[in-house]
Image (cartoon, rainbow, N blue to C red):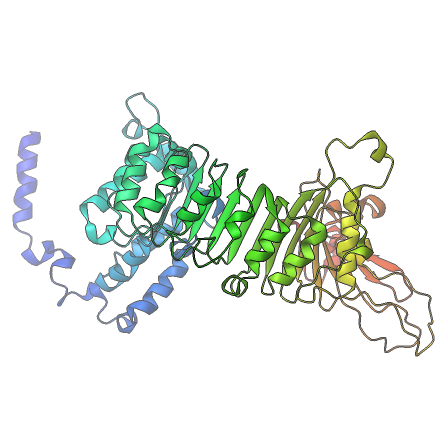
Length: 549
């Protein structure tokens, strides 16, 4: 009976007109589905690409950072990717513009960051979604296999992939699938790789061979402890000539090996050296007969005690380096803080500086020239005391406080006129930068205290044991136009005062606001979130700065 029913259903299809079974894509010249009458048909493909980029913003992610560090708040990237894929099904013009975005920066996210993940989790419990062991299949692993099949079968799409990011667990457990995928991506610039890749782990040997032979346009690479032999071969193989960013971590290599390897990267502009005990000032020696570190825009030195101020200043004083250096990081190096002003003077175009050091002796701010730079906009200044201070110094003032006095002295002298934001591990720094109280009804003509700030400063402070940064906005002094006013600034502060003012002034003081009262004191204004409901009538909700932590 079922067989006869099947025959009858086929016989009905014979009576259907042929044009009804015609697939829409077979005749684009006569099909209206291709948008010939649509306003978008007149738009250039570049304009369509910009529109589609708003549908799925992460497809324009051209950064060289890992997937877990490039998350976008408030968006479900898998849903955005699905919406863009639907756009490519509208017509051929949309398909061409959308495909270039879909395969420009490929991202395999582990889960949906929306309600859809709950629904999909229930569907994966069905038998059709279970593996041989009766467990749900891993979604990122299945997506990686599908992507691998697509790029290996379609060279046109594979050539468009420039960036490839995938979750940590996927790249650690699916090295074979990852190797098959990257072997088909000739123009790949960045890919998230497992940790074993960077230390020459035997389990990652196949993957490393594929990346080295099939991906010549890699722009960022890292070598960690155990990969000394691979790093030494760079000067001979001269691979990855377009490398832009290089990170070296805990490698036991001689300075000469480092210099010869760096010389093989003609456009390298960002270098990070972390935990290189053999590194010394010899890498900064420059002469026509010898090689040295190339000019860099971003330079990071961490745990390199044999690199001194003399060597770094010599490197920064080179004209080709001085003109391009914008970012500098010094963490536990031989560049002592009392000579940091020499480093700033040798690099007049610095914009971002990160300094971190543990100090055991105090500094006399008056005996050292102030930290001066006309260009620095962001400064991380994290000075810490020893974890186990001696019994003699426990009763004295902590030595790190003297370095924050030195920083405050430099700011009040106006030596950092371009500084916009400052991060410091000191809860007393806001008090050092706020102007001192003055007597009310000061006589006209008498000079009032100046705090030296040329522009508003965003100050972020915290203690070492705290997790969140406390934000303080400090405004520069203004002229006193009204007689009887002795306060020349009105600092807007979110500095932590909840322990004094009570919880109604904001959680941990993040939402509290303090303004000058005109007589050297302050008036505390509570956050509108803490006010009763009736007091919010006609007011706009205040901004919460807690996310800045």
